[in-house]
Image (cartoon, rainbow, N blue to C red):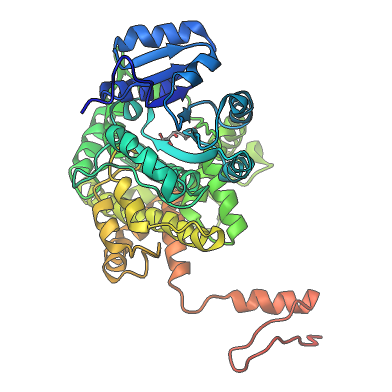
Length: 491
Ligand code: 6PG
């Protein structure tokens, strides 16, 4: 049955017709769901109406008319930039809405803002739903992964609409589910982005090694990533890495014309900040964020890099020369590089292990957040909806969904998952060592390795930290031989 009739009101409304909002509106119209699209700039509305050329899409540049064009209870998706614009839009909308109407926020909003907005609007009997949407422009148009967090009742009215426009998982089920209570949708999307940072950084470090150590051309790197994409590493980010390396501008590879300074819009930062709040370690995700920050220190990097590369001691007086040990003859580590074929095998396995660990980090964070914020997450469903439409979609999410219990995000405690990771450890170690001895930055690989060592150590040297804390600050410690809290007069 068509959800459209010229006499019917729109089933859903979109506010904000930037790239994502416009694509989402077109996606609804393409699925024969009548959609009202609003922007206060008339030209944006006109452009979309012209582009969509669909009887299912109605454009508005007057908010009141937009609101009255929607069937009750109204379902409105905000596709405006996160932060103040969301509050501003809600402020303008609120007087026009009625009890029971639903506002969903499809932007990358901070989950605490979502909790606040939900509470404020609940007082007015208006539902507010934080809804993570992943997949970029193409995803929004052809099928995104959608992560709303709301009550069962609100989900019931959003479900039929969202299921129609979402991507499909490996079993052809829609990549949308009510992930949990209020705030959970944006939280899950935030963690998704943290994993996104980690996977991207691991691929970037692989590029650094292939180019720096083996001098591979862009075309050859594209070929390597293409072959990786055919393995268990198959993923959207690996696939689009091939496209990036293949892109030419004239005779040059575009990649060589792009400045090596990576930006960020803050969601990766929130993931790490939240990990600090929860008191959990996210080594790969956080190192990947730091790697972006390091990249942004371009001037300093160039200055220091030049100093270190100077061979004469007098010229680099303020920093030690690159050969740090004057007594030892410099080692030519390049002779220790394995043949490229062996290296590629190692790299594939190290990447696979590090990817598995990056997902494990994300799910562990979700597990802790689930307890702290009572999100009531279904972890298996999160892994399932990440199989399609989103930036971190990957073949391995099929096994991850199987490995996850519904009510726990602890992947590392799954025997099979742990075994898979262990089978990659030798390669992960080798890649990290290669990075270290060739002085090629591999912070994310190293974080994966050391994070795993830490998390699987039955005994850590942290007893010394406790001894030191107690000595200088009487911070007390616990003992292995008896229960209680102890303090010692050390001196
Ligand atoms: C997605 C993306 C998308 C975007 C973020 C993060 O799932 O579609 O995560 O939301 O990439 O804005 O980008 P930054 O790298 O700029 O933080």
